[in-house]
Image: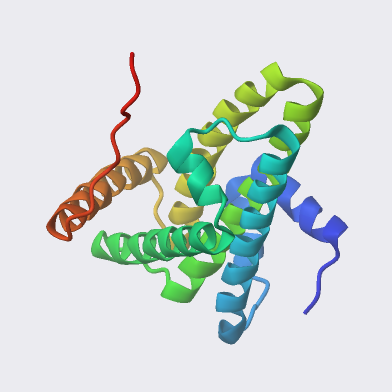
Length: 200
C-alpha cells in the first residue's frame, strides 16, 4: 500500500476538519502490523529532520539545553521516539482501564498519524518564521490547541468513548501522572534538570 504526498495531505486536511472521521479513515486503511514500527520511525525521522532544518534556517534561540539537544539528531530522535512510545502505551492502557476497546496497534497507528499531522503544521510554522515571524507564534498556539483537540477525538474513536470532555480530562490527568512518575524515576537515578547560572 502506497500513498502520494497529495493523498497524505488530503487525509491530513480531512482529519483536521473532522477528526472523528479522519481517525476512522486511518483505522480503515488496513495497514499491516509489521509496518507500524516502520511508520513510527519514519514520522520521528521526519520530525528530527525538520527540526534540524528549522534550526539551520532560523538559528537557535531555544536556550543552551534545547540547542544542545538539536545538535545531536540521534539524541533528539531517541527522545522523541521514547516519548511517542510512552504516549502510545498510555493511550492504550489508560483507555482500556476505563473500558475502552482499542488495540495497541490501533493506538500506535493513530498516534503516529497525529504526529505526522503535527509535522505538517510544523512545516507551516517554519515557513511563517521565514516570511512573517510574528505569525509563527500564533501558529504555535493554534498547533497546541489542535494537538489536544485531535488527540481527544482520536482517543474517543479508538476506544469507543462518547464524551469528549471526559476523554480530555483523562488525557490531562494521565499526562500529569506520567510527568510526576517520570520526575520521581529521574530523581532516583540522580538525573536533575539543569538550572540557569547567569546573572539576572
